[in-house]
Amino acid sequence: MAVLKVLAFLAGMTLILFALSSAIRTIVVPRGIATTIARGTFLVVRRVFTLITPRKADYQRRDRILAYYAPVALLVLPVVWLTIAGLGFSCIYWSFDVADGSFREALRLSGSSLLTLGFANATGIPTQLFVFAEAASGIGLIALLITYLPSLNSTFSRREAAVALLESRAGGRRSRFGHGPSGVEMIWRFHRIGWRGGLHEVWEAWEAWFIELEESHTSVPALAFFRSPQPDHSWVTAAGAVLDAASLRVSTVQGEDPEAQLCIRAGYVALRRIADFFGIGYDPDPQRGDPISVTREEWDRACEYLAEAGVPLREDLELAWLDFAGWRVNYDSVLLALAGLTVAPPAVWSGDRAMPFGGRPRA
Image (cartoon, rainbow, N blue to C red; front, side, top):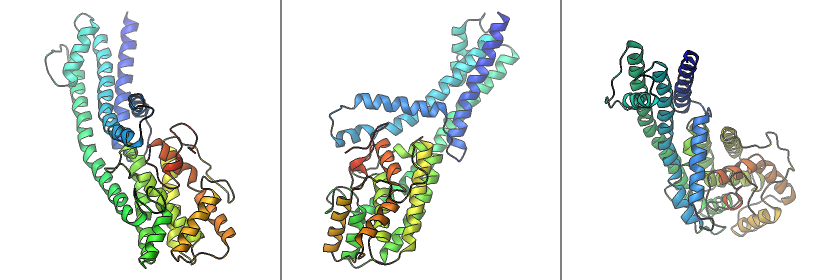
C-alpha cells in the first residue's frame, strides 16, 4: 500500500507539472512551442466542429460554424489545464490519506482548493501547503488567460486591418478576374488608376506584415484559426494575393522591382515557419521548373487580362512564365496547405485549390 501511495504522489506531481508546463509554454514563452495538451485540445474541438458541420453545407454556412472554433478551443484549453492539475492534486491528497484514503474526498478537496471555494477543509501541514499551492495554480492559470486575450485581440485587429484594406486594392467577392483577392487584379487596378509607384508602398507594408505574421502566428498559433469578420476575407488568401502580385511584378511586368522580391522572400519564409509549427511538410529547397498549382493556361489568361488594360509585359513570355513559376514554387504548397488547414474562402490561385485538412489539393 505504501508503494501505491508513493506512486500516486509521483503521478500527481507529474500531472501538475505537465499542465503548468503546457500553460507556460503556450502563453508565456514567446516562441512557437507545440504542447501535447494544446495540440490535442484543438484537434478534438476541431473534430467536434467537423462532425456538427453538414457535409453538403455551402461555404457560407461552414464559415458561420467555424467562426466559433478557435474561440471555443481557446476557452476549453484552460479547463483542460485545470482538470489535469486538479487530478494531479487529488492523487497527492489521496497519497496523504485525506479522509481515511477516500479518493472521492481527495477530489472534493482538490476542487474546493483549485476553484478557491473553500467548502472542504484540509488537515495537516503537508496537505495545507499543497492546498495553498493548488489555489495559487488555479488563480494563476485563469490570470494567464485573462492577460493573454487582450494581446491576442490586438494582434488580430492589426492583421485584419491590412486584410480589409486589400479588398479595395486586390478585389473581393466581385473582382473582375475572379472571386476573392487576386494579385492579377491588384496590378490591374494600380495600373488603371495610374499609381504603379504605389506598389512599392504595398511591398514595404506587407513585408512588415509578413514579419509580424510569422512572429504572432507561431508564438500564438490559435490566431491562425481566428476567422475574419467578413466571411470572404482571410489572412491566407490575402497573403497569397500579395505574393502573386509581387511574383507577377518581378517576372511578367516590365521593369525591375527589388522591393517586390524582398516582399516575396519575407512572405514565403513567414508561411513556411507557420507551416513548420503545424507540422505541414514542404520542399525547403524547391527548384526552378518544379510543378506549381497555377497552370500555364491560367497564367496566360492573367497576361491577357493585364495586356488589355495596357500593363507593359515582358516580351519573352516563355521566360516570364518560368520566372513566375520559379517565384511561386517557393510558397505554392504551404499556401495551399494553410488554406486547407484554416478552411479559407475561395480565392484566385489560393483558396480555390486549397488542400483539404490532411488531404490533397482540391481541383
